[in-house]
Amino acid sequence: MFARQVSSIAARAFSGTGAFARPLVSRSFSAAGVLFQTPYIVPQPQFDQPLALKIEKRPNVMKVVEREAISRADIDGRSSLFIRRAAPRDRLCAGDVVTVETKNSMAEGAAVSSFTGVCIAIYRRGIDTSFILRNLVQRVGVEMRFMAYSPLVKRIEIVHKGVGYRRAKLFYLRENPGKAFQLKLLKKTGK
Image (tube, rainbow, N blue to C red; front, side, top):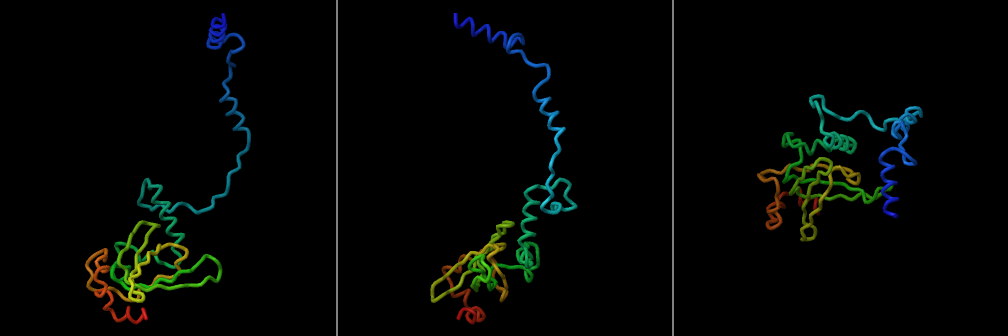
């Protein structure tokens, strides 16, 4: 008997008669009518128009976001050091002697430390661009990786352009450190 009651209730629900009858006006329509009657609060834009290039008809969203992030992080023009198609004298290359000054914390008046070394690798990854410097400190090889657009990096300066390096990654200097440190300039700054 219970099964007959359940089936009859279900039949009335789908037939549109009885207590389960659907209203003539759909619920979404009435909700949409209410939404159009209430005023919207439109927030003010936080940033300028996206940095889409004029030659791009349909810009890739992630490329535009990355371009905006680099333009915000490029406070002292350091992005010109990492342009791939720039002339070698204008950009940072593997084999260059580089000095990097970094802040020890984000606090005001934080101490600044510097590291000078031979650039053995550059990783161009947009806003995540980084490079590795290698130097000998008390006869021990020390390598430090710096993020180019980090707010902790205060200054990047090319001290001397490398001559005679034909590779993009100079990892072979780990086994033969004497070849990189024959530069008189690096010996002077290291002492």
